[in-house]
Length: 429
Ligand code: KE4
Image (cartoon, rainbow, N blue to C red; front, side):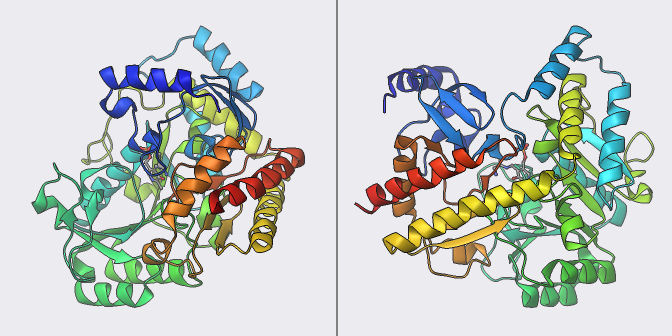
């Protein structure tokens, strides 16, 4: 596969941008080689700077559930651009998107728009601490909630230990207020809240793990989180930046019937442009400035172009049958993968919730970050590069999710299944 253009662009990019990328996971560090520079994309396919075309299952890490450059989104954004790109003043468009989110997501009565998932989660944490007057927060190993300081924290020695900075620059006095548990660890959750529930401002969780690869909640896990946080007077925050409008029009909270106190959104609600959001009951959200005293602001929050893309995306997703179709397509792909794996005698475990899915090169049941870490990442590295050679673009890490779009056709899927069989054989050597 010709990569000369991407290679030279990568050399040039590194002169001006740290690591040549504006987000670390794009650098292909986990899979070797240098990143492909993408020049265009349409529907389920992307084309790199060397003209190589790929069937895409990264979907820009989740936002493009209706594929790349969807005409309804492009036309609407182009029209809005003619009317102005940013005013720093309220617009009718923001009311329209906010109303769609409020109508769709069961636990959201009012919502604040921001410009990224990270902004959404760090604002929600500040709000929870402001409302409860407490400092401690709880998160789960393997869940990623953006790069806010309180969230770039790794588990200390014991399960109930205080957090430690997960990278330089995180103040240890802040990190120690972040408590970390294994995902799906019901016993640990009960022990922690029994021990110090009244000190905990909030618990933040991806209701379906998407940043370890896809790790679904065990039956009863989300209900337990709802119970113990309510009993402790702590806020339950669902980070639905990936799952929001991905696994159902009302997100994971609709799918599983568990209502958090605050919900963080991003990705899909921006339709491929920068939008994040956090929302919840009005009594909580009214603590946010200018109504309340918890400060949060943003020059481009509710940006007209980004909000227009988000509105069009939610219009597309609200059509009847969309999620049933996404589920059927994703099942077709994963069943094809499973058939390939079985035929070749490869050890692999699959996870899927709707149109987010993963294949792990392990025989372990996938319930936590520890179980995911048993995967053969060397085999994944060979598999990833073989898939590229076969024209299929998957996430450049075993610990990321795969995404189906509404515009992948059965033919695209069958081509992918055939390509994956060849890629597996190459990877197995
Ligand atoms: P952003 O700040 O990247 O918009 O959102 C942060 C975030 C928050 N919560 C969840 C559950 C997320 O998955 C993310 C971001 N996801 C990663 C990859 N899974 C984005 C890719 C990247 O970092 O470049």
